[in-house]
Image (cartoon, rainbow over all chains, first blue to last red; front, top):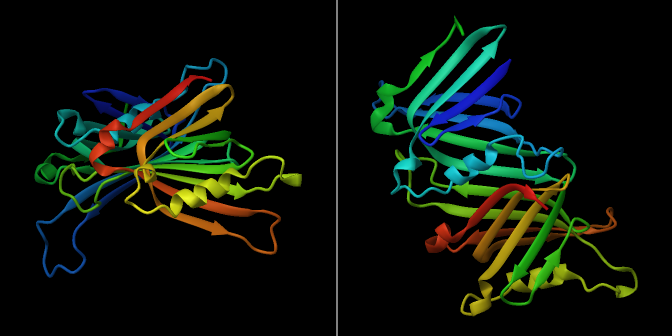
Length: 142
Length: 141
């Protein structure tokens, strides 16, 4: 199973070896008595922070660009980006998640002296008034 | 993977991989927001050992961190410039610079099982100056 993460405008493409785990969540308030309008779509991505030791200065990954995105203030257009995540296994795209107006809720980086590499956790949400634009597809070949 | 810490603007503090064991960077906004929030906080969590130098030859820099944590908010140097580097294979994987960091939490843990204690420091950049935080990655050491 491989995960491909990318955003458009500005572009970030995360290498497949960097992405470790993806969680797609559709949430409604658990105390609602009937189907609610208050639906939220959250995407959590966990991945590795790799360094290219062969040539210092050349990153083996693009996680630094996600870090920069995480501190973009809400007044700026770039706070919202179009995100696409593909889950591929055996030549088939099992899932493709598209969040055309995603923003970062939380981003964290963890480094430990016991591990050789770092780990990041990215939590994204689709802008709530544009929830209908979220696309989940799957089961097609590339 | 090694960590280096440099605190300036008060009593200068410097630490390296012999003391520091973990670094966490957190960019935090309210989880319940419907759209990107302006309430952005940038946090840094640093974990290290309370090391002692045999014969007290090297001054213990962790004491200076503890006294920074105790500082009342009316003093100017409770806000300090903090720089943390994550180094791996001749490369600076990450460099976090918080020019106006303050201590949110400081914790020391000592017991009779381990030879040295550990401490955890939670820092935040002053919230109206969040855009002054400098985040860099992947350059030569």
